[in-house]
Structure formats: C-alpha cells, structure tokens
Image (cartoon, rainbow, N blue to C red):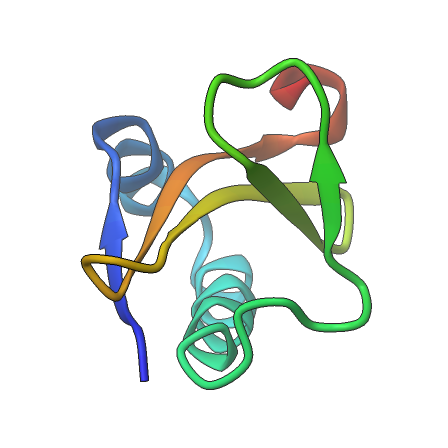
Length: 84
C-alpha cells in the first residue's frame, strides 16, 4: 500500500476548492493507495520523472509513483486548461 504525499501547489488548490470537489478528489486520490495505475490513468510526456494523470470531472490530478519510497506524490491539481 502506498502513502500519499502532496506538493505545495496541490495543498494550496485543495485548501481553496469547494467541499464537493475536495471530497471527489480525496476519494479518487485515496483509491491510488491500493491501485496506483487505475484504468483511467494516463502517462504524460515531457516530465523528468514518469508522471501520470487521472480525471476528476473538469479537473486533473498529476502524480508520480515512487516505488522505492512506496509513495505517490500528487504534483499538481487544477483545471484541464491550466494543468498541462
């Protein structure tokens, strides 16, 4: 089972978002603890480390899987237009 860590940008976004969106993102991110590569996850190109994204409505959650440390680091959360 993986441990979830959040970047400063992700923490800032979550602190400002609405409760309904917060709960949807939290549910989706907590599911990554058990299955870090769900069927809707896609690998992104152009990042130094292997980075994946999952959809939460109009928002995207970008994260890295760090196997050695057993972590999932949520790098960025934002609307689709702003995240890429």
